[in-house]
Image (cartoon, rainbow, N blue to C red; front, top):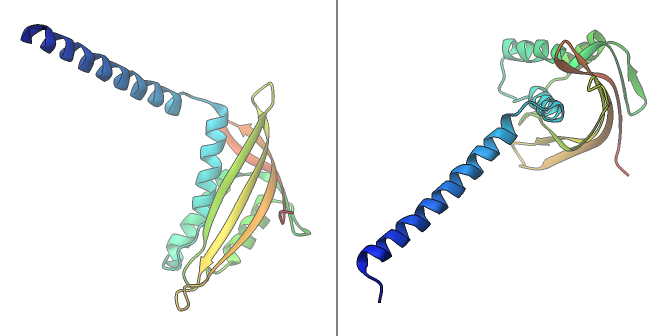
Length: 173
């Protein structure tokens, strides 16, 4: 029969071991999440682009202008965008088209998913495949509409920040 002190020592040891494992797992997760990586930087950049393109219906005109001005950081000045047969050849033309878009009642939510990245050996360019969905909800009928496109992007690391150089979008098969 084990004495009380031996049982307590055994229980304290196993609790300490579990705590050490949990703390080590948390530290490993934090290191993985925040360790600099070009792929994580591209993913974060594209996620932020989706958020910037999302338009709440309640945004004021000034808030929309600020949101649209921030879009410049995501695109190369000479970006080429092809979507549904329409070609846009500069960042300024792209921003102009986006600013003319009026959010529908209920707003617009843009989500970027299924991001697949092929980073070049020099880590200065990347080819990216992704799926983008734009969804709206009619506030009166609560009917949702989702428009999905698959995009192939060419991205470049310009001065430490990733920008889209070329984008080709199409309706998924």
